Amino acid sequence: LLNSAVERSKLGLHTIEQYEPLIGSAAAERIAMKADRVRAMRVAHVSSTFYGGGVTELLTPLTLMMNAMGIETDWHLIQGTPGFFGCTKKLHNTLQGENLDLSEAERAIYEEVVFENATRLHLEECDAIIVHDPQPLPLVSQFPDREMPWLWQCHVDLSSPFAPVWSYLSGFIEKYNAAIFSLPEYAQHLGIDQHFVPPAIDPFSPKNGELSEKEIRQFLANYKIPTDRPLVVQVSRFDRWKDPLGVIDAFRRAREQVDCTLVLVGNNASDDPEGHVILESLEDSIDGDIVILAVNDPILVNALQRQAAVVLQKSIREGFGLTVTEAMWKGAAVVGGNVGGIRHQIKDGWNGFLVKTPDEAAARIVQVLKDPQLREQLGSRAKESVREKFLMSRLLEEWLDLLIRYGR
Ligand code: UDP
Image (cartoon, rainbow, N blue to C red; front, side, top):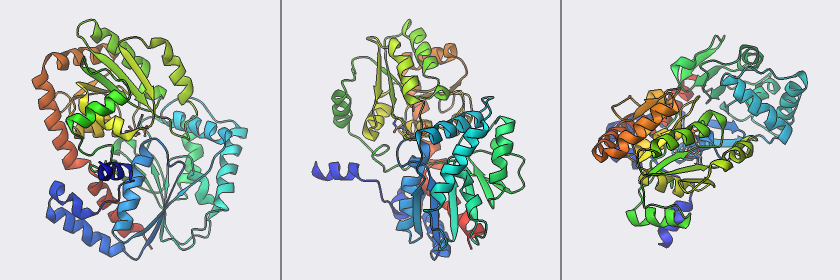
């Protein structure tokens, strides 16, 4: 018990050899050879939080694994104020399509706080700098004489960014050597190289590793989650783009036809100021059929995704949707919004279902709950598609390719 408690409390330092049973020895050797080519490099990632959200989920295993392979890889954070994170959340919302410009004062706050952070970053020794998302984007302006490549990776859904905000940000983006987006359909008019690299999951992390039936029961009991009826689950930050109200609506419609409990779990990223407002807006919906938990516990997420009869991710915008990948890896039947990265993971009717409206979501919940065999079938195909396309080893390899190409 002690060993498993220690193991599950660790960040998850894994080597490529551990992936061999999942990806085969030829792939593992190819990746190790690419790592050899960049071993002398020093790489720095910059993002805005260690806590919550998809970027953290990616950078934790990626930076650890790069170090395990001998590539000196740092991860720096930029610090923000509530005013700063208010501006960057607004930027995030406008990149995902909301029509709302930043005022002059907001732009000034955004740039000034990033510039203050720049004074503390001594990146001269690095051979490549990788900046994540809009929060630290303007950093590049503070290093005009740099010799190393700067790469900007944007993880949000860029299918229809608000044009004035995009053109403002482009002024910073075009100072980078290349921009990296999650999906080809997020390509933009930019005067720099663009690459498309979808995210991936760490199959050995506390969130994704195996759990026994007994452990699942224990974790759910710890949080007083009832398991007498089938569970419908959504795991998401409390964010309007994740459509929690649509989830509740879909659940209520399904509940008229089948017996089930809805569990909504959300943590709150420390750079996301809107979470508590969204959470409060849901409180009136709580009743005997609906459990809403605001906690940050990866093993609870793991247990819920394994126990769920249906996992929902009814997003209306979704850069990629790691929660979908995580649930599919566990063999869950996932019903996802027909948007962004979810569309690249779920092939409708084959390894999950894609839906637009609460009505459609309700119909799929009912269909899966009435047909346990369907759940098994969707789930086993889902797991296989994650193994093929969305494991961390693939993401690592794509980053090695980018470093081979751009690193100095
Ligand atoms: N997450 C979590 N607990 C929660 C909500 C989310 O651990 O209560 C994790 C989730 O498992 C996933 C990440 O946060 O790994 C969210 O990534 P995703 O791409 O789904 O969405 P984002 O938050 O980046 O928009």
